[in-house]
Image (tube, rainbow, N blue to C red; front, side, top):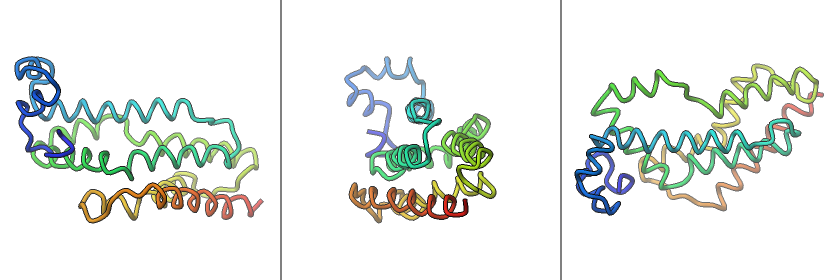
Length: 181
C-alpha cells in the first residue's frame, strides 16, 4: 500500500489492506510517518542481517558479489524504490523524520565494506587507496545510474541488467585493485 500510494495513503487504507482495524493500526503506529519509519527500519534490519551473514573473511572474489547482490536487491528493485520514494515524501513533509534517520547509524554497507577493504589492504591482498571512497565508488557503480531513474519512475527493474551491473562492478574493482599487487 505504501509503495503504491506513497505518503499520501491513509492509515485506513493501509489497515484495510493489512486486514486490521483502523484502531489497531493507530494503536500500533499512531501515524503514517511512524508506519513508514517502521517499514524503513525493517529494511535496514534485513540489510543488517544479510551483512552479518556475508563471508567477511573470504577472498574479494567471494565477498564482493555478495555485497553487490545486497545493494541490487535494496536499490534496484521497483518495490524498494517505491518504498524509498514514500520515505522521501515523508521526510519532505516532516523533516523531523529525516533528522531522526540522520541521527542514527546509517551506511551499514559502506561501513562494513570500508573496513573489509582496509583489512585486505593491510594484509596485501588488495592495494586500495582511500578505502571509503573506493567502497562508495563500488556501491555506486551498481546502483548509481539506475536508482534515481527507478525513484522517478523512468526505468523499471531488470534482473538481467542488474546481474550484468554487479558482474562488471566486481570485475572492474578487482582488475583495478588486484593488478596493482
